[in-house]
Image (cartoon, rainbow, N blue to C red):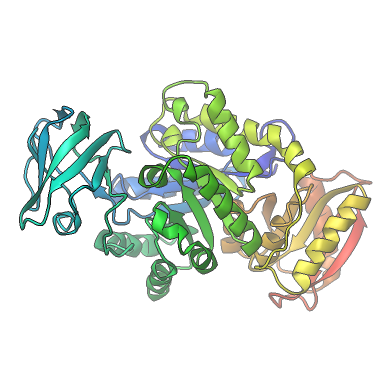
Length: 481
């Protein structure tokens, strides 16, 4: 049964990325998440050990084999995330108006003096700039800067300051590489493990960050594709180039919402999703989508609307973070995400207006447009494509067709990558030598997956000559026998 057909028989085209963690560890829970509609499993390298990451990978691949359905694995690199250093007792209360020194040298912090994981902050911070901690819950304002060993701040918004909490600098320009030394060590581990389909790069600010990661992956002979995470407002100044350089883009609204005005975040989300749509790149909308389900079995109405709007914004995938990593209801959260995507899908089909796909040129793009016209005039159950690299399936996915795309490929890496493509149900198929075999194979798998019963019509798209990537040029309307 196709990945999107696990709940009610409806083929749900929006993909779900689930973050694995303590709440979702073990084959049993991962199996339940996969059956609930999760297509891609994210391993966050900001947390956990190598042994824990290894167990996650082993369990995901075990469930994949057991269920007989492809599952993609995404490694999410830490990037230059700034965090609070150690605190005596683990946490301290900061009162509004009190003064706090941030010093260069590592110390065990207390109520009047702390350190951060980035000592260079002491050199870069300017008087009057704000330092936000714990997603902006705590706000410090720099009162004295330019000293060699420390800066002095006043607490504007107080609260409990805990060790390890994230720090954001919305007004401070830091010259940091998006690829840290820890990231490079993690990349070597990822390449050796050899089971990752995507690598997400944190705190991307320019296309050069993506290119640096691509060079690093190439040196390690790692074929994983790159997801550029948009978390800083500086990235929006170069977003066109970043989208072109990456294979996929994640709108990571947590840090983005701290570093820029909150009302501007939905606009940024819509802009990035639209750019990805026109550039034929997958777009993931992430962070706090069903946040309340970390502790509650039900989401808020606002969260349901947020997920629905992400689908309407042309997101290819929506992501669960803490909900599945550390939440009390990981499987319920995945089921709810799938139900929301299903509820909004028909309306999305009604209002969707096709747009030019600049990233899909040539015959494949023309055929995709032709298929849309065929679907509008005939009752088509599914579109079947035979693809070696998965590129043809992505081109068709960006047309937002009103029926599922059955992507047949003999390449296992392409099979897993397509788990992130909107509306695409990837199937591992044998190598063929003639277009007649593709027709027969499409007929077989359309029935086997439940996409089309005998007597229904499907559109079959393939290449001629067989085996030559990038030459999709054949379209046949076929009645399933």
